[in-house]
Image (cartoon, rainbow, N blue to C red; front, top):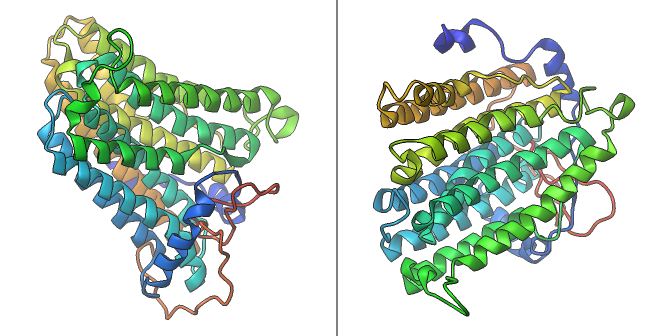
Amino acid sequence: MPLLAYKERHILSPQQLRKLTEHKYSCFSASLLDPLLQPWWNWLVAQTPLWLAPNLITIVGLILNIVTTLILICYSPNGIDPPPRWTCFLCALGLFVYQSLDSIDGKQARRTNTSSPLGELFDHGCDSISTIFVALSACISCQLGHYPNWLFFQCFCAIALFYCAHWQTYVSGTMRFGRIDVTEAQFSIIAIHLVSAALGPEVWLTKIGIGSIELWSGPAITTIVCGMLSLTYVFSVVVAGGVGKNGSTVAGTSVLSPSIPLTLVVLPALMIAQKSPDNIFTEHASVFILAFGMVAAKITNKLVIAHMTKAEMEYLDWSLLGPGLLFLNQYFNCIVPEIWLLWFTLAWSTQDLLRYCAQVCLEICHHLRIELFRIPYSPKVSNTISVGSQSNFGADKNGGTSHRKSKSKAH
């Protein structure tokens, strides 16, 4: 049975585990904000106890981010009802804490000499989940429930951009961050929440300028422009060919192959949202985004693993069961209430993602003989901690550098 699948077999083969051990992560970053934030991150990590495991820092930040977003969702599940101002402030605080902790876990790994490839995978896994909640919270804070098509676009744009960033990494072997990228996006969303907290979420519906243009159009247009620039770069890397044999990916597969899993998530989501006789997306926007977001997080994690282990990515996945049932249900004139299947999709995709991630982490921990959330020995303080480091396996992240440096957290 599918529920027992992870217990019956290993997810990672011995060859993949060997490739994982050999994996060296490289990254180029030209972020504008990262150099400015380094003094804050360096001070923060200096206050962190040496016994605190880097992965534990990451997961605590993620949990805070999720909890604060869920509080916001409880007050405005459809993105139409204005949530209390304090919930917007909580989201801003939760995202700031997550961003800060996400930036020091690598420094903590270097301090304690507990670096390993697991941290990179764990960090990307947390980021894939955080992306869903961050995007959804920003849309609710801007009251985009009044414009469901825009809400859909904004959330799935964030999900797709995160996936595409790892797509180009799978092709080129190097993750690249532009001048306006993850950190800048996170602080922009923090600013959105703070505006909603100070002036009320309704302020985003204020008409400005000529015609019926409303204030929320500013962040929306910014997303489109930045998204187009990012996608243009991603596709330029893909078209140029990969680092593998004959221009293939790091795994020797077609550079276009990662597009298939993403299409199997986004296209059904769009069709189900548009064709629903019960307006399931409009009426239950948060549940819909979370359900398909968890599916997207699963395939993103599989892409990251494929890159790190230099393996071919599987196209089909059990997480697609929920979207498939929703699609078939609409095809047969909704013989089952759509809301039932939507909640099933959320529950199924969430447990499937958590089980998958847990099993992968356990396999890697067993292979590397390390623990996920605990430093099993008295850590020795590293004498040299790079000022620009945000990587759990010791590579730096200095904005504007011209050579390859790691940004991700592998510890």
